[in-house]
Length: 105
Image 1 (cartoon, rainbow, N blue to C red):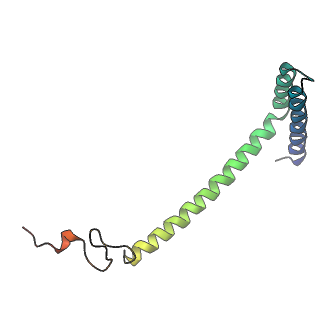
Image 2 (cartoon, one colour):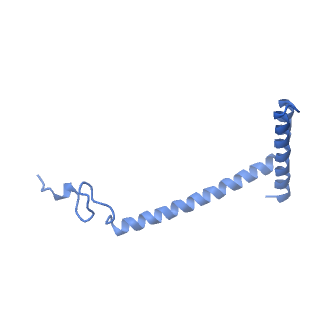
Image 3 (cartoon, rainbow, N blue to C red):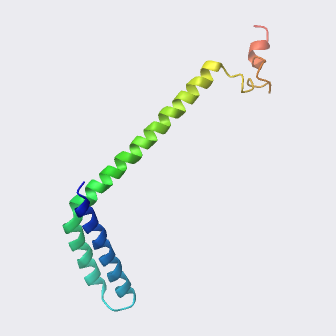
């Protein structure tokens, strides 16, 4: 991504912010602000879309990394067995569930 284009988009946002302040104080009207936002978007659309795509990809990669770590932790817990969790219905991890203790029939 072009750093100069990103800097220009950032500076443009500051101009929009100043126009919003002026509108809030009655120094300009809403149409002027809307026009300025439209011009800003036309001037900076490409860099804004590129920045959004880059950020989305970064967040996606972070989330994917966390999911893989979670999967590894879950896999390790399952490989160790459920010794850390009580069997269903007993409250104790070292006993089989109630269904397994009953004789068939």
